[in-house]
Image 1: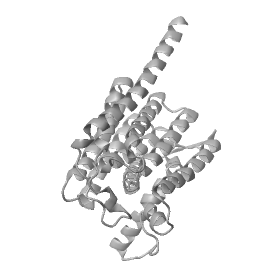
Image 2: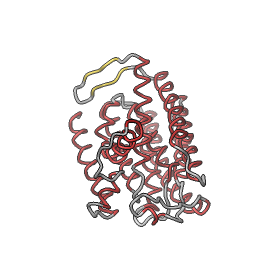
Image 3: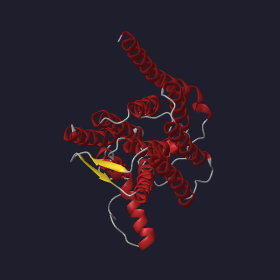
Image 4: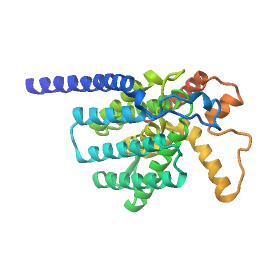
Length: 320
């Protein structure tokens, strides 16, 4: 009994230490290493995109590496977890190489790399987890054929990576929305009885983003770039899969999906089928509300965040 109590106290102290280490390491490393990052050229077609010109870009390489190191130091080492960490770092590296490139990578190249990572996530998840999902709001379980489930996982990962990437365009927006989504996933993990180790991993990721936002709040000193946004999208998809209720991705990340996803749909319909929809809506939505509705950057971040928080509170209450 005494040994159990002491062990629990030690584990709690280690968990606290990991959280403090992740935040402090991110803040310190970002402050020291930002000067070595590539500089942003400003987005020509984005609202106020030129204001970002000259700022360090690709800061995602810092907070993602801090997250990976912290996870290896403070989270029990399991093969599945290590694979997810490697894939998150790979996603970050591909994004950083794009950030550092003088000529932005084309959509085909990015799409192929996303597909490769998504396939690896699907294979890893199905190796270590059952091919069942829980309809959490209805408290029902559904068995999905493994091949079909693999295809659905690939779609989930691709969508999550790309909508999160497209939402990155206002100081603090994608980071804040990712924190809200992941924090909600952490709560869902605990309510649904998912693995505690991965729930702690989610907390570490959130803390590392908070360390980055220390420098990215309006007016920002640096930008996460694709190195951060693509890795965040990947991790969100993995985290929601680990809850056992992947369909909850839709409500808990709805603002990310709407902000980044509608633009993808609009562009895809135009390029593939010459169908022009949402002609009067500027994409991503964060550009529309700033350019057309006159919202400031701060209003955009706060209002998008408020919408997602309210929605996630309803989801949490619905499955309690």
